[in-house]
Image (cartoon, rainbow, N blue to C red; front, top):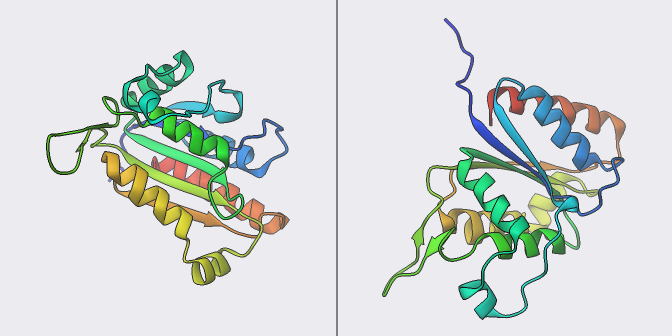
Length: 195
């Protein structure tokens, strides 16, 4: 029996803020794409995206997204699965990724406010895989810090707009060559399976 998964529309967001190709996050994104050759994959490199930071609530609620963000919203709308790869910085997502999420997850695209109750989730039907890299051991991050920033991203942003289920890969000790090799292969496997 054929166990090959069906082809999926996948958006890989390489969210390392530095475009230097030496960063491990870029290698993880490339390995995922290599494995996902049978799928319809689009790659977004956040380091190459030019957009302003939001400074006022009214800009978020009523302002038009800049052209680069509007194009990204179309990529998200077209995707069935989103792979978000980023480094843990100061215990959280890098500022550029947070600014990107604030720009992208606007009312009318990601959610719709109602007269009462919680907003309507407009991105239902999409799944996600969070891939987070860090220097500290992943077990230490989970046990001591409770993986709080990853949980916050899942609950307060992705699930809030309807993206679920969400898989997560927390990769610690990224300076170790053996760890890197193992995780590059895991990313190829995840890409092959479209997860």
